[in-house]
Image (tube, rainbow, N blue to C red; front, top):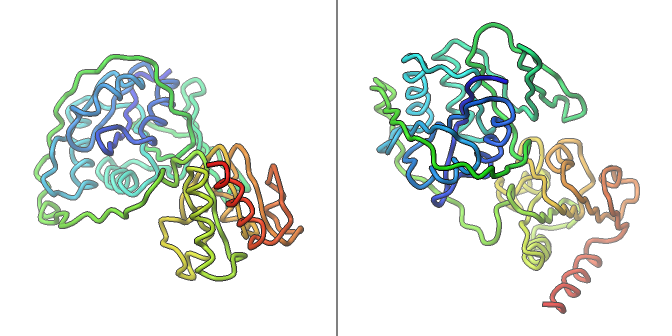
Length: 321
């Protein structure tokens, strides 16, 4: 067991993000003390972070428009310099996580491993597992030298689990003077509106691909997803074609999802797409090409035209509503 592990913690709508809770669960299995390092205020998050295993919280407080990556990395560096250095700092593999860990890596002159899916402690060694070549191979890297070791993990790599802890101590971690970097600030934040669950948090995901034929047919995907109380997704092909926004993309260069049910409609199953969804518990593939690679990972395959199959599914679901 390690003595101290930090988790870069984020919140949304007054609650910790799912990625934060997943990392806390893994950190608890590796270390005696787990510290959540919060971007912003911690008051609304403290109880939930404690319930999921955090024994201490550092909070930067209101960043006042400063660039989050620069501010949090500087605050972390200052705490480490003061003598409270962890063995490992775990980050989510998202925009803010990548930004902070990259800046902190430079400040500490330490290497960073990103895009990981597993971490283990073997005696005095810390080993991290990373998928490569589109997820077809796994590489295990062992850290050497002194910490802190910096690691970022894909969403859904671990399972969040509450342990019933109490709200931990919250310690201020003020942001030092950022110098020239402090001259840059966030001017506006644009959040894409959506109804229903978020793509990477949904229990059911319905994704469409080129087999739909044209952009207008994507409406079937959205209708089916809504009927199932799930989230719509997409292959890279139709995102590149401009049918749907990038935020819908599932795959190596999009979002990694692990829902209970993943429905792939008109998706052939390119390697880069399957990297993003093959961890789903149940995969349903609908494609008129019986040789499509997607059937190789599907739990249930429907060889048929999506233009005939999807309307029937939608009709059946709506008749039960």
